[in-house]
Image (spheres, helix red, strand yellow):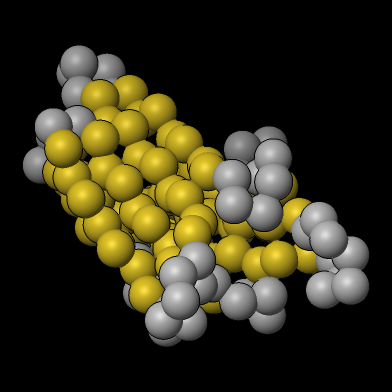
Length: 120
């Protein structure tokens, strides 16, 4: 049996849940298309003194960096899919949500990231 997933007429090409190596670790996707298209997508997590939650993006050549600043324990992420590329005329979208798992009393906590990649 073969099952294909979609949402709003967009094919779900990848999805999953991962635990990062540590609380401030990063998650990197190497996206290779058959037509020699390559994109590296990296999500990393940081904190600053402002305590204001925000997302910063930086595109350099074929590397898109998404920096999540002051992401809370309760879960934070994108509220709408982010268009990250166009491959063969089809838009590629990315969505994620991140959590810190474990109690605040424990000095080390695990960062869990749920993600979905969509294609038109």
